[in-house]
Amino acid sequence: MKPGSLNPVRLFFGPIFQMEVRTAGRRTSTYVFRFVFAGLVIFFFGMFLVGNWSELDTQASSVARLQQVQSLAPELAMAILWAQYPALLLLAPIIAGPALCDERRHRTLPALLTTPLTAWEIVLGKLSGRLTQALVLAAISVPVMLGARLLGGVSAEGILAASVVTAISVIQIAALALLISASSSRATAAAVSAFVAFLFINFGPTLGITLYNQWIAKDLGLEPLSFLWLFRTSLPVAFGAITTEHFAGQYLGVGPMVIWGWSAVYGGIVTILAVFAAGWRLRANMRQDPDSLDLLGKTKPRKRRRRRDTEQADEKSSPVMVEECRHSRQVSDCPVFWREWRIGIFRRRRSMIYTLTGLVVGFTLLYINSDLSDPAIHYIVGEVALTIMLLQAVFGSTGLIPHEREARTIDVLLTTPLRPRSIVFGKLAGALRRLWLVPACVLLHFLIVSLAGHIRPHVLFLLPLVMLPAAVMLLGTGMLAGVLFRRPVTAAVANLAVSIGLYAVVPFMMAMLQSQLWGWDDRSFEVVLTGIMSVHPFAMVAVTIDGVSLFSWSTGTLGDPITFNMPHDEVTVGVYVVMESIAAAIQIGIGVLAAALAAHWLPTREGRPN
Image 1 (tube, rainbow, N blue to C red):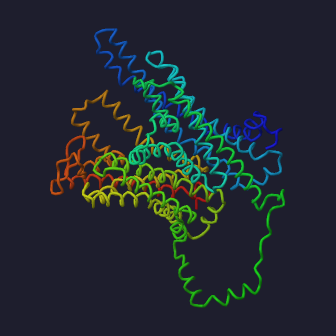
Image 2: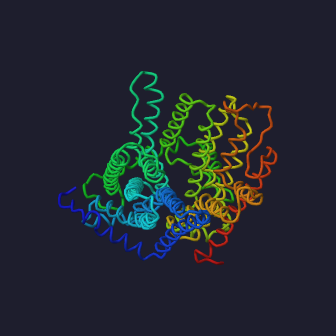
């Protein structure tokens, strides 16, 4: 990097930043999304106050009422912070992921070579321009939390610390998305990979410290590491410590530098390294771009095959081999399904080997260092696997139609005799096939646990019945979002909002409504809650594992009847299967209906109503 290009104003607020901000400012969706996000924050604030206002009126003493108001303010601030933090971590890679992918797909990357901009000016301009949108969303809740200070009980230091850790987390995951976007061809793949990289960077040291203390230090007689290292090497853990001390009222006995200061430094260092790596990667891509200028003269000419080698290759190809190859490549009457079904979850064999090796090593360490009779292990495995699979479903289908649209191949598909239904459902089937890894790992884990005698084998049937229909529904809504919205980022955000609304907003609304309209002992509310829980995969995974468990604290045996704890009553396995079958049919029906609507509106959205 040249010394003259180290001007921070030029690096962060140069022409790339101005282009990104102006482009986002001219989109109506930008202001609509900000309005919706702010409306949700204010709505949660109002619902929280309304839900607890009736309890305040019942207090006879004004002093007691004031004390209760002061106790509600930290709970309100913590609820808003924990609702905002994961939402921003999911939105930041979606916003920053397409930054360089779009330049390559639109073939405007060679044009950047003709400008005096350096690679780091492009990267930092893209990062600052995309982060403007995410940080505006992060700042929306700050006035609400500062307003909660009027009620008392909320410290300004806690709000400041939580805001700083949130901002650094958002910047870090956006920088990782930009790094992966420099070498990725799809924005959705860059967003998902950035989220996985963020989890590895922030929870990898935590897992390593835990394994060292529980395994290496204990067996070798070494000094275990202090738990304070968990705060220093993980931004989410530091965020949890901030909310615990400042809003939950549990004093940790350490200073702010230990709680969140060192984790902020760690996150900043990782962010700087990611930005530098993205700049170097972009320089390498610029040099290798076939449409760009070979400024350094290092591009090697393509090696031509000699005619003799071609003739020898033709002689080695027998008619039988040619016929077998042609037969294996037969497309049949569903070319879109044929193509999508053959797209694997891994683009490269090396990635598959690394992933499978990591899974084998991880589960091996889990089985060696953990007691399989501990129920917490199986709850964590089930919920984490469900989260990963639903994230794959959210992002796995939203970009299929927009990518065809950007590549200008959707017009070609619509001019063929293929029906729109064949196009949409063919892509939906391929996206569903690419979800095989997580269910396979979950079933293998619970098969091992059931063979060890810690859980009943019914889990091998009940868990897929709970998990897969939700994935099908989100894949269908993702196809519909991809048809309705032209940009893959907008479609991904819309499908993510659908999933958050179903699995987070609706349960919160039910909790608020029951405090106002019903009581926990009301039979009608319990029946309604049972119906809502039956289509909530996160709740039903926990209920399923709890019902089929035979843990060390349980007195049951394999011959005892299986019961599942639902809000209205305990149900037998037959009733539970019927309930989940109905819930699965509803979710699959919603997914199929959304895909059918996408197929119906696809020609109209592309200007081909006939």
